[in-house]
Length: 86
Image (cartoon, rainbow, N blue to C red; front, top):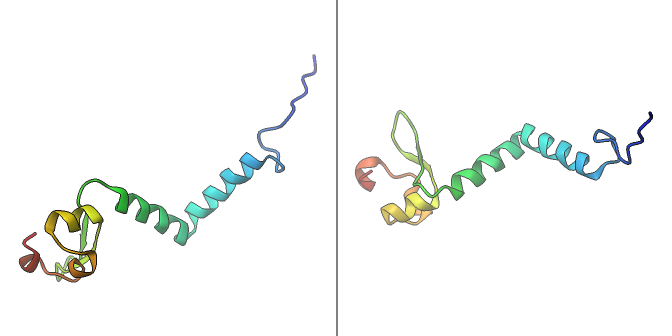
């Protein structure tokens, strides 16, 4: 018995397949991956701080961390732990 598929899941003309490929390509590119990490970082409910290991200077902080410590993001970036009482 021969079965005819209306749409093959791997056919290039399948619009959903094209979106999946585009998403994989976006994640594979540095800009796409950085955007994904940025979205996760910013959306986290926990306060996240990225600091330089040598100087301990704050390089990046999400909104939750800024709110938790009472700083605007621009004020928080560049602070040392003693200044911000981390």
